[in-house]
Length: 391
Image (tube, rainbow, N blue to C red; front, side):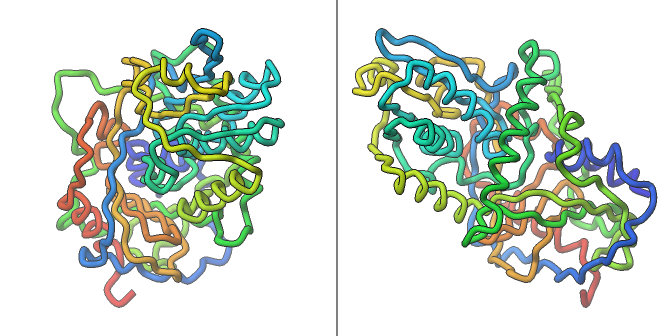
């Protein structure tokens, strides 16, 4: 029943929530109560924001290790591909353990994105006074342009390049992050929540792009590693549901549940936690490691993301372009949707729409940060196709 949906998922962006999960999808339709689903008002004139980010991908996996700059200990914590938010607490826990081995009274954190903030908060909890040095605070960083779903192995490493034993390290980071994110459930502003997510196949295809479309290239397509099977106990399996019980024009519908970060509220909560605990923010634009070595703090956690390519001359970092469009919020829409290479996430600050028709390799080694209005409008029109007339 879900063969077509499964094929789409395996080609899609959500390795954790869709591809790996569908491999164990239940064979019988879910008999539980199917909630009434409000249709998404998918119109191009409701797009109010388009944002592009360059995901910082390292074929070997994230860099979490130490380096000495004279008398300064630098702990690197960057290169998480599409899994920065999802792995932030687990990766930062590893980085902070390295940073606190010498019991420093003060710690500097470079960068104020997802990894920078979680590193800073954990260093505070470990007893250090923390100053974040960065060009901008979270709302202006590339972390603020993420989709907001918990996808801990999205573009995290390449199959044939991952460091030895990385799968075990990844599982530890994923489980630690999952537990930490649970602490933000139910808080004012709903920074973290669980939603239903539907995967839909069939229906109209009058204007949508082919799910199998890709750019022809002589360069072999990257094969991304997937480790989701090792944490299948953390999230529900996918189950088929009756298509006629939904507003979708579909031949097959699958449903699961996924954790979502409402990034505006979540980021605001993290910043508040940091400042309430006495954290300081200093605006800085580092161009060379020597500037970092000159800081008063002699233990530094480097969370510069893709910026580490230039700052640390890390040529292993590969940009992976990603674009999201946001539709005006619909408070009544509390479910995610995957359809014909388009993902929709019902964040509180706007319904996020992202095209991933090229699968995980879409945007690989693409440094173009210019928003593409045509791409955004095509994605919205594709979502509009899936809803039955009058739904």
